[in-house]
Structures are given as structure tokens and as C-alpha cells.
Length: 197
Image 1 (cartoon, rainbow, N blue to C red):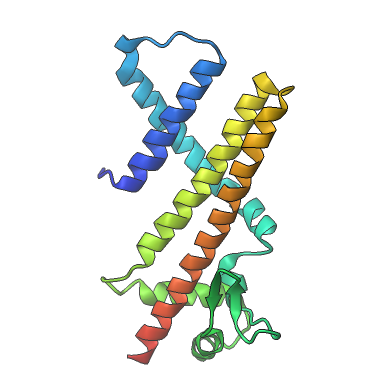
Image 2: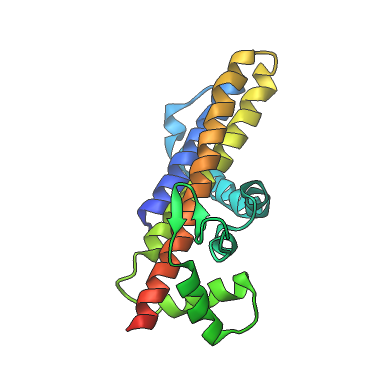
């Protein structure tokens, strides 16, 4: 198995941070001679935080107002394009027209799947980077929520926890939403470029 920066950041760093948080909250003794065991436990915890973030994705999509990959293929009639304020996609109609040539049925999920499959052949694609950034943002959001729950177990009466934690969760949520739209837009832009050539 080959480690990349995503595995290191998500599984190891976040998992170890979560383990360290549990040690502090539980008032457990940290033993230097168990450092390797702590790192292994941290990696496993990070792996499960990553898994939980994937399981919570439908909930996140619901809070976003739908899947970014589906929403970006729905034109806002008032604006004439799709996306959100910070991540507009002006070539929506062009993408829809090209996708309709491959699948006449109006189904944004199928269309997006066709676009992803088409660009998968491109070796120089930036899409995997955008996908990793979205996945990392999703895991950071899940980590912020789990950390807040762990801290709330001990400090539930302290209003300062909520004053600090809730804005952090909101920023992580907003960043995750934006990264989802950046990823979806990049997929469709690359799809249009491939179909043009």
C-alpha cells in the first residue's frame, strides 16, 4: 500500500489529534514508550473518521440543498447559469447539451456519472486533486463535529465551548460545500474540453 498526503493528513494527523483529545478529556496518562501504539491507534481512528464522513455525506448534501454534482447541472432561470455565489458555472447549458447527446433522459446523477467516466481517460486531469480537496473538507467537517461532541461530554455547561465550536463547524461546513461545487465544476469543465476535441 502506498501512502499519499491525503492518507497522512486525514488518517494519521486527524486520528492522532482525536486520540490526543480523548486522552486529555479522559484525563488519561500519556506514556512516551507507547508512542508507536498511539500512532497506530490514531491511524485507525482517522480511518474511521474518514468512513463516518462518507456515511454522513447524504446528510451533508441535504444541508447543502442537494448534491453539488446534481445542482450544478440545474440552470437557475433568473441567472442563466448554475452553481453558488462563490462558485458559478457559466457553461451549464453547453454541458447539458453535450450530456443529452449521450443520455437523453433528464437525470443529473447519470449525466454527472457520464462526465466522470469520460474524463477518467485523461491522464493530465486536475479532477483527482479537486476530489481529494473535497474529501478532505468533508473529513474536516466530520472531525469538527466529532471533536465538539467529545468536548461537550465534559464541558457541556460551558457556553465558551459552543461560542468557539459552532463557528468552526459552520466554516468547515461552508468550505466543504464550496469544495463540492469546485469539484463538480472542474469535472464538467474538463468534460466540455474533452468533448470539444
